[in-house]
Each structure stands twice: as structure tokens, then as C-alpha cells.
Figure 1: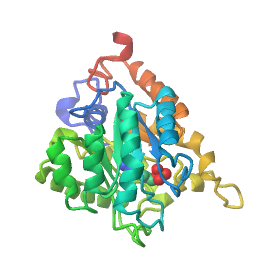
Figure 2: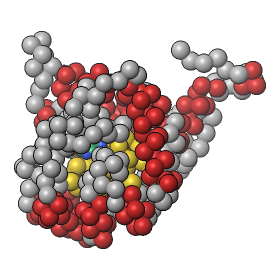
Figure 3: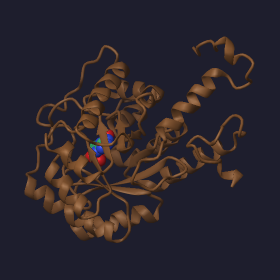
Figure 4: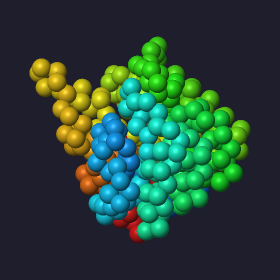
Length: 326
Ligand code: PMM
């Protein structure tokens, strides 16, 4: 239920809750210092340089194929490309540092030299540091800085934007289903604690992105409840990244009468549906394997926002003038 408007808002024709919702969307899509500002939810395409990733492992395992794939994603509408060399699928064992460097750094260099905005998906400070030197523009750490104590200083020294994902535990046996009394409150509180640690470590507040970590120590129900409450994540006051692409909860939602989930590669239409919902809710970016449909989805979401009157949408949901007004 919506809260009752306060008396001072009664004379204003914009309902109090609509304004609060609008403001939280504005915060969520606030631009990140040091990166291009997009006037809509950005699309982060995924390049996993791994033999064993959750949904595309093995396909882009050599540098040339991985760079080409990243460029293809940009041609299809990706605004930035997330390069990772270590699988985070449940039960995966960690790759050693040299191997992760060997996989990731040349791909980051290759894409950055073509002018692509690259993010590096790693839990290792050494990989983050080398990737930043090779041209990466931001660091995406699924452990939120917990896996490697040197990560936060490296990111802070480089002045790079940092994605802080909600995460509980190490990969070896630790990517287990979490138990929660109230998944939204607990994820928000734990993320807030991580953000505070990251800020104490010297990362600038306007360079921090938060991410609920769908599927990480969470079952399908947890993921859906989090997606239904993105406003609560916006309240953390940082741009929000939503990474639902091909994840197990979509398999569960799409499962047929015999409860068999479709394979990961058949979850792209469902992924694009989540992208539209996340964009509509004000997410800063969505992280996806198949870019084309999501690129359409975020553009439709932006056009619908732009169709609201300036009074309904003061300044546009991202703090810029609505598209039609330019
Ligand atoms: N999920 C995966 C990998 N990296 N990064 C962020 N920020 N958020 C996520 O939810 C996330 C991530 C696992 O998916 P993949 O191995 O299929 O790419």
C-alpha cells in the first residue's frame, strides 16, 4: 500500500509517493563520475573468458574470439562490456591468479584500444589493477571487496568506479543457498555495510555502484522478491546494477509442467523482460549475455518515461530533459 501523502503535499497535484519514487529513480540512475553519462539504463554486455562459466563458458575462451565477441556486443547496442576470467557458477573452483591475468588482460586491452568502455569482473586486486592499466574503466567485484583485502585500496588509488555486489562467502562450497528472514532488508543492510567499508577505504561516493547479486546465495524466490523491491536498493543512494541474465530463477519461472527449466541460452527473452522492468524501475545498468533484445528493452523503457509530462517527470528520470524535449 502507498503511504498517505503528508498534509503539505495535499495542494500539489503530484502525489507525494510519485515524487518519492521519482527521486529514488533519479538517485539510482545518477551518473557515475569518470564514465559516460547515458540518458537511459545502460546495457553492460558480458564476455566470459572462461571454459566453464554459468551460461556461456568455453565459447570465448581465446583472446581473439573474446575481443571479437565484445565488439559484436557493442555493435548490437552494448554501452559497456564486462570482461571476466573466473566462473562464479555454484561449485566452481577458483582459477589461479596467473591464469586469470592471462585470460583477462589482453581482452581488456584489445577492447579498450577499440574505444570500448570496459569493466573487469574480478575478485582479485592484482587483476583489477592490471586491467585498469590496460584500459578498463571500472571494476566489478562480486565479493564487494571481501575476497581480497587489497581490492579497495587498488580501486581507490586508481579513482575507478566500483561495483559492490551483495555476496555471502567464498566460492568453494560457499556459494550456497542463503537463509534469510527478510531477504530485502538483509541484502540492503549488508550492502550498506559494504558500501561504508568501500567509502572508508577511499573510493569516492560518486564512483560506487550497488548490485543485489541475484542468484548468489539466493534462491529463485529471493531473486524475485529483490526484483520486486528495487526501490529499497535505490534508497542506498548509489546507481544500481541488475544482473539477471539467464540466471536460475528465470529457468524456474519458465519451467514447463514437468518443472524442467529451459537451458540458460533459452532464457534471453525472459532476461530482456527483466531488463525492461529494471530500466523502468530506474536501474543504472543491466548486465546481459545477449545484448540485442535488452538494448531494445531499455530504449522502450526510456521512450515510455519520455512520454510522461514534464510535470510528472520533472527533469526526466535521470536528471536530464526527456528525449522528446530536446
Ligand atoms: N553474476 C555473474 C557474474 N558477474 N557481476 C555482478 N556485478 N552481478 C552479478 O550478478 C554477476 C556478476 C554470474 O553470471 P555469469 O557467470 O553467467 O556471467
